[in-house]
Structures are given as C-alpha cells and as structure tokens.
Length: 360
Image (cartoon, rainbow, N blue to C red; front, side, top):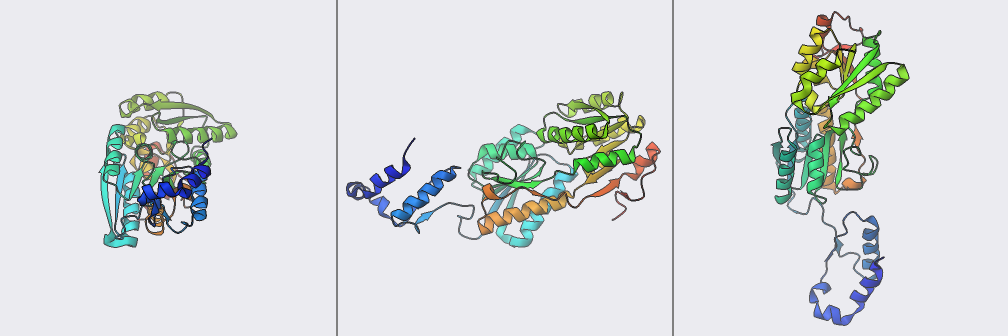
C-alpha cells in the first residue's frame, strides 16, 4: 500500500525540493482526494504537522466568491408531477437568494441520451450545482461529474438508482429528496376501495429501476394480505396500451407506482381500464387525476421545496452532499380519489377520502 505520510515527509522536509520548486512554499496547498475520506484525514493531519493547517483549502460549490450561483436543472420529461417539483425547487431558492441565483432549465424529453448531453454541458459550463429531476436525469448527472454537487428530486430510492452508498450517508456528491410514498398504505387503500379484490396487476415501465423497487414493496404487502398479484411491464410508451390491455384480462384491480412513463400515458390507461370497469390505484395524485381511481400521494411541489432547501445549504452554508441524508416528505399524505372515474366505475368512495380538486 502506498504510504502517503512517508512520501509527504520526504517531500516537505527536503530543502533541495522546496528550493527547486518555489511554488510549494506558498501559503496555500490544494489537494485532490476524491471520495477517499481516509486520504482526506491523512492530508489534514500531515499538513498540520507541516505547519500548514490553516493553508489547505477544499474547493466547494461556492468558490466563485461573488455570492451568485448558477444552478443547472435537468428535468427528465414534462408531466405535472415533475413540473411541480421543479417549480417548488426554483421558488424555494429564489425566495432565499433572490437575483443571486440563475437557473439553466433543460428538459430531456424522456431521452437518456439527452440527459447525458445536458449533464455534460452543465459540467463544461461549471455550474455551481445540478438539480436532477427524476431517476434517469440523476443517473446521467452522477455519471457526468463527481465534483459538482447534485441534488435529486422525484427519485424514489437513490441506492437503487446506483448513485449513492446509503440513504443515510450518500458518500458521494449526490443527495436529494425522495418521492417514496407509503406503499403499505397504498395497498391498504386499494383493499379499502376494492374490498373484494382477488388479484392485482402491478404495472410499470421496466426501464425505471425505482418503479421496480416500488413493485417489490407492493408485492410484499399483497403477500401479507393474501392477495394474488402479477407484474406487467412496458419497455417504453409504445408498449403501454398492449401491456395494460393484457393486464386487465385476469386481474380485478391495477396498481401503478410513481412511474414517469405510465404518468405520461394515463389517458391510454384510463381508456382501457374504465371501459373494462377495472379500478386503478396510482402512486401519485396527478396520475390519479389523469385517469386513476384513487391514490395516497405526496405533494411534488413540497418535494421540490425540500430539494431547494438542501441546495441552499450546499451553496450558501457549504454543506457536503456526501453527509446529507436523503430527505422525505411522506409524512404529509392524503387519501384522494378521482370523482369522474369513481362515477364511471359505479364505485361509492369512503367518506374520509377527498375528491381531487374539491379542496381547491
């Protein structure tokens, strides 16, 4: 193993080296240690021994020094939930920083290649922080840089997305807010709304790892309840109609987790399921409003606000994403239903549920 301490001592204690390299006798030493926390601690200890404990500096997102910040936003695609998250993020940072923050908003149109191109552009432009809205945008951002802070939103599980070590201690330049809704309560809601359910179709896009994660949670809850289930997955939007049509042939209810592809195709899902009198429980309110029966949903605007607060801590107060736990807003959930769909299906909804739009 390479002995950093021994090599430092040789280097800094040798007069001939310091004379030949006058640049090392300055007041500041810049050190690159990547994600190696052990190396970072060794650096600090050795520099203190060398009398330079006050001279070493680590670069952070606020190295521009003029108190202004440029934030790059990658939104995976346009649909109401992601739009709300972006708005919450921008509103929060604007409220806190005013005209000191500038946003470079880019929509990737649900194309992985576009996400990668946008992320690379942000890195080239040396933005102060990247906000990645949805899983593919987050993965592309993490692949593009290990240095620029990244705050995610509308991502269910960051570990499953493969961008952090743990939700409690990310370990890298990535942190964010999770849109994980209480799946156990969603399945309980399904049983409440469809009390005689025998088999549930779990429908999602196979290209979205966080949807698979939620599917696994739903499967476990359905198993506990003694309810049969079957997975049906679409590779992309082109397969949604065929998949949902197949799903309802042998199931009497459908569960769809928070899934961007399905959210973007709820009109198709609505047309197929309503005509067959099959109720759909959605993982998110805007999906439900577009064609589902019921949901237990978080607020995506609130989720974006949470991400904005985290970004502020990083930009202004020097917080380290590697030590910032993933945040959640799942404590504020309300059971809601789509009154139009309930009427079309002939289902009387429980009195303690709120019709979407009725509270406005």
